[in-house]
Amino acid sequence: MARSANSGGMRRVTSAAERRNVGEPRERASSERRMPATARRRTTAAQTERRRMAVQSVHVKPQDTVRRMSAAERFRASAVQQPGRTVRGTDDRRARELKKKMEARAAQAAKSASGESAFSRFTKKIVKAGDIDYTLLFLIILIVAIGLIVMLSASAPEGSSLHDDPYYFFKRQLIFIIIGFAGMFIISRLNLNNFLHWVPRAFIICVVLLILVLIPGIGVEANGARRWLNIPFVQLQPSELMKPVIAMYIAYLVKIGVLDLKKLRSNLVCLGIIGIVALLLMLETHLSGTIVIVGIAGCVMIAGGTPIKPVLITVAALGVLTFVYLQFDPTRMARVTSLFDPFADAQTTGYQISQSLYAIGSGRLFGLGLGQSVQKYSNLPEPYNDFIFAIICEELGLFGATVIILLFAALFIRAMRIAITAPDVWSSLTCIGIASQLGIQTFLNMGVAVSLIPNTGISLPFFSYGGTSILTLLLEMGILLNVSRKTVKE
Image 1: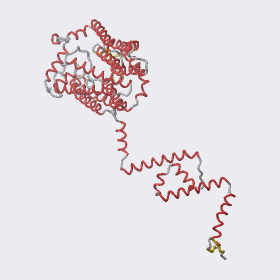
Image 2 (image 1 turned 30 degrees about the vertical axis):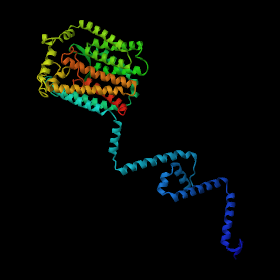
Image 3 (image 1 turned 180 degrees about the horizontal axis):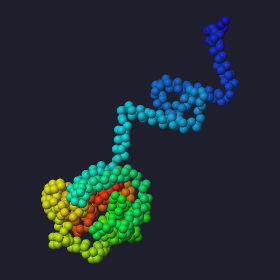
Image 4 (image 1 turned 60 degrees about the vertical axis):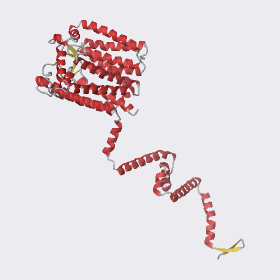
């Protein structure tokens, strides 16, 4: 039977169900007091979490809720939904792992949705990793390609007469070029700072190789000079390895603080190192190699802080020593004297220079045509090596020779630009040494061909035949490309 309640003058009838609902909170509160404290806390936490999620579900779409919730929140929510799981502080690691997995899946889904293939992603990585000086790379490829073609033309008669194969020297040179380009690519991608501790060891190895060349039975003698080591399938010329290594070694000593080239003592130490190398090369009767290596080291010293005045004094002293040395070597002294009038004794001391001048004069403005040289047929000695520039002038004329000179000038300028913008001392000085080698060696070879300087027997970079030479040069280009990756954005 319903009871009546008087509130404010109005009478209201309450049913038994309403009386039970009124008493329910009191009964629930009493039951919660009888629960253990731990269970009450868990129940309260669960209720709070459910209320929070209910509020979010009213204002946010379900997919947005999952996206906006952090990994830890999603983990706690799943723990509330599953009664057997509890939330502890040690579960943060699992939450982080879950977050990483979900981010990876989202990225993969985005790539799949954009239709990007695995190959295109790999190509992008290569392009990003290859952030190099592409102008320098283009110059290297172009010069090497032209040099290989010219070397084929200049060496075909010699290959036919000596090996019954006009492509003999071409094929051997091509093998070293392929190996060199592979090495160049690898070096351009390395972190060279991780290999700097190998530079002193490389210098010691080169010095040991120069000593081994002097030992009869180990070193190979040809045309009165002992410059090569016999290694299976190839003859190694240690002086070519020493050209970049001496620049890297001096740069390394400056980088670690052993040498301060603004001080006299450090310059004397550096001159002692250069003197040891120069002495070994002179014992090999390798005058051209000595000039190039001393020139490379001198340029690195000047760039490293050596005052100009001591350098000029040293150069003058070396000139005097060279003159004294020539007095004891009548063959080379005759080459110096024949410079002034090579046609006065065109059959002996002036033979090479006179034949070179004949080839250059025959080319005129546009040349006789590629492969049409006459002087390479047993007239001009070493047409594919020391005097390959004369063949260039004969076949391509003044126009072709000028183009090749401009290509070398562009390569030298590009190398110097990389050296100037290099990020550290070692990279800068090493690049200056490489650029100096290109400039000095190119000038000496062309100067000999046009009778501007005495015949020293030096190769033209990237053009002359020689496995050690082309391989070393391409590895040096790899160093330039490596350094350009750090400076191209600047």
